[in-house]
Length: 464
Image (cartoon, rainbow, N blue to C red; front, side, top):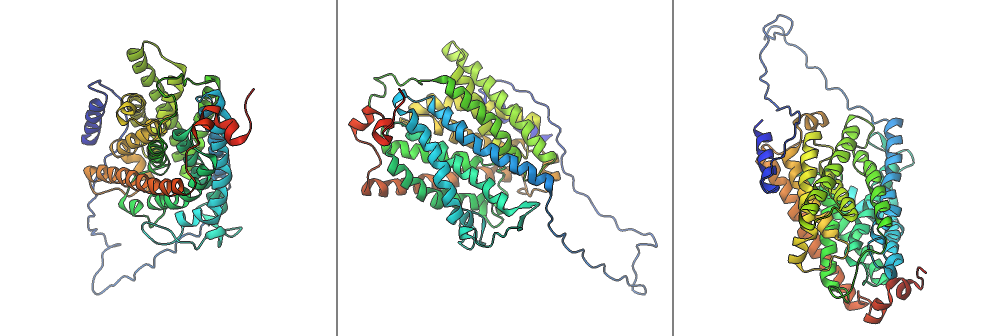
């Protein structure tokens, strides 16, 4: 009860005093005191010693076809989020002369990251015993046998499921650099970034020996690994590239919002695999993750549209699509840990805060984050990661056998620690990588190529 009151108090503060009411069944863990039995059947004496019962051997992992089927479907859904989902979402928001270039970033992420993940990315993320960095013992998937298992699913399936997360992370950050980054520089950048930034942070959070995993950080499906990581990297890249020519003087309105709405819809559907699949099984936790994902997306879209109507006088189509994505981002780290009430409040808060992120905060930062990767994904990821430590359900945590920090305040600090560590490492490493690439081959197209449009200057194609 105390935790719920604290949560509602924090929610009210974040919403600027607006009261938000949500009901959530929370079971507060209670300590159980073992009482000594005096029955003859259990009593032990010096004259009648009782032999110790040997510990039962650990159950041998076995393949579960139901779990495997669900993760097969989830893998396809997560890839759908990038191609065509994010490609359409971003492609509709740029000017006509840069549509193909923008979509090519998402397609290239699927191409290059798939190869990098097999070569070394998976091994760095999920092998070894280091706290900060895996090893190369599974490079080229060495040791991933045909019949090897990861829990109740084939390890090969776990490999490709995680691969799709790496793919969409790279595609998300490409939104910040739209309209002005060299295609060659982008390819070199992601080749290094996936191995030096994405894979290590994945190890921190999701590998059994990762330092944030051991600390008890709650990140069910990638609030830190995917969203904060990509958003911060995108912001750093936007600063280093500089602003687009004509920004603030020329119209840069989206050329086709129909594509954007279709893309957002595919993202919404695919997110069920993103969050529901992160349960790594077909059961109650996956079902709840999908339910809270839907609730949070709808709540954030609603609160975004309400605020937009109050401030701008109209509720826009782009606002509805962006609000839904904001809710999906916010619930991602919490999907396997919160109930419906927590998801509702998180969604309502997320819609308002992310609207602020792409308006007021964007002006304060003075960065040309072209398609709001930072405002939606980093801001939404930060809000979601922190609120996961506020709204987690004791009942779900207990059922999932998840280890937490000893106190509520301690858990909240662990969540904040994960957010700060991801932001600092991603930001610094991204800066260094881009700085080196800029010195060697340059990262921005020249002014003539930018005015011509990247479709023609970088790919020799254009939409008629």
